[in-house]
Image (tube, rainbow, N blue to C red):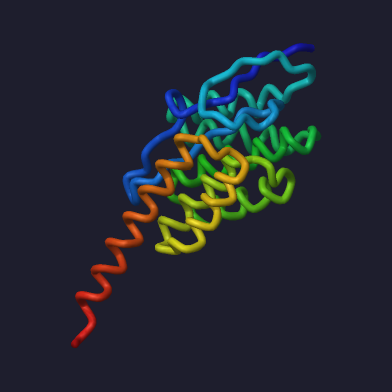
Length: 178
């Protein structure tokens, strides 16, 4: 069986999270990690259709459906890279739903399975930003940039995270008595 899957790039699947202005990225199963944000298509033998359908639902903004399909796909055996992509997408879905602890668990599982997936680092950084843990977010974005130095998504995440950190630190200094 041959299934066509896509890797999603900045133009099609990256959403701006209102809570912090940080970005997250979806990962397409069965494709080698791409160093760019451009959407690509490839033919893959034996791809998990539930993971692919979950990624498509997430791309369309249907977080609950995408999460349901992705979790169903993760319950089936698969290649470690496919499962890592699925966990990264489950992380993104939980971020969309603002369920931070579940999102963090999924991102950690993704990175444990495939530490070469820059999108999982970016997704985890979004969680850290939501919690005000800017140094951890910056560390993850730097890890992602080491894998994909030209990623527009990661570069924008770094810019926004550093800006939010400066604003937060500035507000903290103003509230301290002199």
